[in-house]
Image 1 (tube, helix red, strand yellow):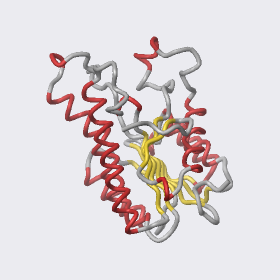
Image 2: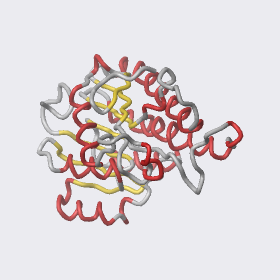
Image 3: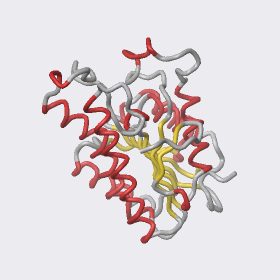
Length: 256
């Protein structure tokens, strides 16, 4: 099965949020595949990350490291310019950008815990960064088979929300889903061979989930390597006819 539907040949791949967790596992797994010609690993400190440095030593020129804070649009524009000097088309982009807790702030359990700064931070990382990444990479996704996948979360589903809480995280992931679905309609006109997808990777053993793992059912806490493999399997499974959809790690559709 090709890395993405309808792709004949090797793929140029970009992973955003590549320095840890699922993003790092995706880099490792994809570089081990002969289907990947070259991979660009994007993160705030990509060129200073020990794990990425080890991969670079192992894979040589097949791995390119670029420092970019995706929360800053000018940084994304600069990254795209640097990328343009190295390739003219990307076949697969996976965004693992996002945050659940930062700077001591925790997911809100009640309205009383909401504050503007936390809301803005959640939307900046979880919704705005991935869609602005797509904006600045749009020219790389034309004319050939291409997939843009962004990691979302089941808690971003409005229809599946039965517990409440986690206001800013839920809302920012719901916003991401809407942004991706809207972009899929535009991209369908620009490139009928392109696919945009929102993916829930399951609860994964990363820094993001670590403070909340106590409530995860047995067998439902995934290793990053397993989560990365599941993401890749969904990328292989869903093509242009499915563009704009929202799926779980096992390929099951998630209600909006």
